[in-house]
Structures are given as structure tokens and as C-alpha cells.
Length: 322
Image (cartoon, rainbow, N blue to C red; front, side):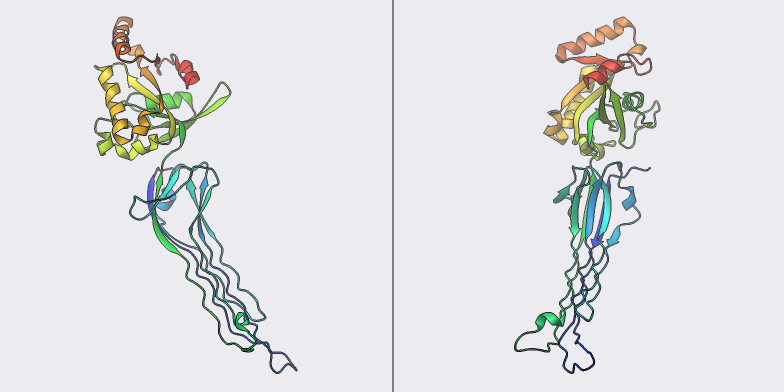
């Protein structure tokens, strides 16, 4: 399934049916009274958040949606059938923005949550409703109201327990693969991951949803590289797993660059719980590894992990910490 995290759609709710002017016509009843029924209400367009969807790809080729109109009223005071509501399924984590892309209309954070995006028009009134003591045979009726219409932007922010962050080719996708049943594309060159991948980790009788966020680089918050297009997905992750290739020349600088990009995008990102992991320790000698770790410890006073995804070293310890 292709990943799409932004889509513009136009929706139009159904119009209400017209009321009618009708009179009772039966044998031996010369002057039957009014019996025109009301029109049915138009159907609404409703967004519903569902689990299991993680893309807005369904809205790439279909951007216009319209619910059913209400039927007109009938004689014998029959109300017209109401139009059916149209339900549009969106992934959990979808935000609805006005056409200006800035005004947030709704934010889906719970499964099966519903939001009426466009309300159907009310049905018109039949002439029965206009009968009075002074007007016994009204011919007046009203037309149905038009249904609401609106253009909106849908924007998906993936919800996950843990977001994998780090430079391209640090080993994020490999960690997701080894920890879950997810199968992201993996290769030894930058920007292999071009879309967020989700996986479910089952460990120690617990379940964790993990998101592989495409690699960040310096200037990402300005849109450089894959940039701010994916930083927004980090916002919805409860905690962060920061993976760094231990073979890099300056580990402290590499760490700082990613943290600075998070800070520049939103200060909230820097306040999330973070676990730092050094990957590819199998490519260094024990002495080289110890020298690098010793230098990093002077700067970073919290606990961090050293792993080899290739050799499956210390993976369980990281998962247990997560």
C-alpha cells in the first residue's frame, strides 16, 4: 500500500427534499383538508477514524464526495425518505484543516471517533403545517435547505508509542525489522526509507507500536532532505529511540544535530523521553569502541545502549528499556 499523508477533499452534504402542497381527495368528501407531507432531510458527510489504516491514499484519485439528497414529501402526510449519510474512513491520527491549511477543524485521536464534516439540509415543510383556524386550505409549502459543502485538507500524523529517529542509514529500519514483523525496504545508502513504517513489538507480555521515521539531516526543520514532511510524525510518538551509527567521526555532534532539528521544529519534541542507542558496534575493535564511548559519556550523563543489529547483540535489553 502506498503512503500518502496529505490530501485535499471537497464534500457536499445532501439537500433536503421539498415539502408538497396536497389535499385529501376521497369519494363523498368534497372539501378534503391539506395533507402534503414534509421533505426528508439530506444525508450528512461524516468522517470516522479507524484502526488498521495508515495512509490517505484512498483520497488521491477521489477528492469529491456527496451524500444522498432527501426525497420530497408525499400526499397523506407522508414524509420523504431521508438521504443516507456518507461515511469516509480516515486513519487514526488524521487532522482536518480548513482550506487555508492553518485552521485546525478536528483532530482524530481515538478509534471509531466520528465528526460531521458537512451536515445535510433540512427537509421542506408540507402544506399541512400551514393549516390554521383562518386558513383551512393552505397551498403554501417550503423547499428543502441545501446541504453544507466544504473543502478541507486531511493531514495524517502517525500515532505510535516509540518513534525511531536518527540520520539516514543509522539502522532504524533494520531495528524495526528485527523487533517486529514489519518489512521496510533496507539498503546501504541514505534515504532508503521514504515513508514512515509501522511495526508492533511484542516483548515481555507487552505490546509496543513502533514507527520508523525517515532519516533526518541538518536543516530538516526547513524542509531540507525529507525534512519537515516527516518531523510532524514524531509529534505523535510518546517516546523516542535515537539510533546513531557508532562509526561516525563525531558522535556528540551527530547527536546534537538531530536534537537541534527536533528543537527547531517544536520544543515539545525535545521534552519526550529518549533512549540513545549506538549501532554497528561489530564493525569496531574493542579499543576503538571504548574510546568513542568514553568521549560520549563525558557529554551525555544518562544511560545509553550499544548494539549490533547484524549480530543481534543487546537488542532485548533495548526492547525491555522501551
